[in-house]
Image 1 (cartoon, rainbow, N blue to C red):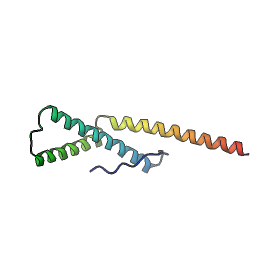
Image 2: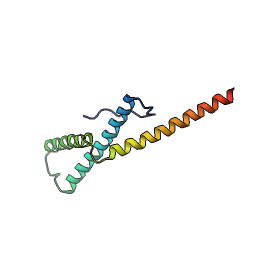
Image 3: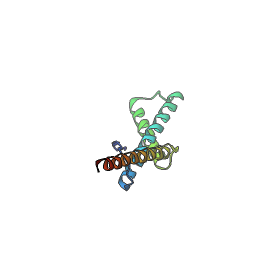
Image 4: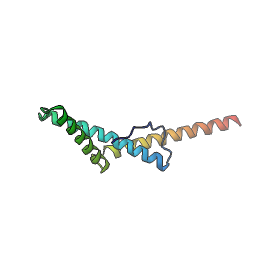
Length: 107
C-alpha cells in the first residue's frame, strides 16, 4: 500500500531524504500506471462487472502498478527524481548564495 506522500522541501544529500524522494517518485509513477490500466480496461469494455469484482480488479491494478514502479517501471520515477534533485540543488545553491551575501553585507 502506498504511504502518505510528504512534501519535499529540499533534498540535502542525506540518505533518508533521498529515499523519501525516490519513494514519492515511485508512488507517483504507480498512481500514473494504475490510471493507465483502469482507462485501458474501460476502453476495452471490461467494465461490465459487479461492484465486488470491480473492487478486486482495482486492487489488482494498484498492486500491479506498484510492483511495476518499484522494479523500474516506465522510467517516470527515475526521470522525476533526477529533475527534483536538480531543482533542490539549485534551490540550495541559491539559498547558500543568499546567506553568503548577507554575511558579507553585515561585516
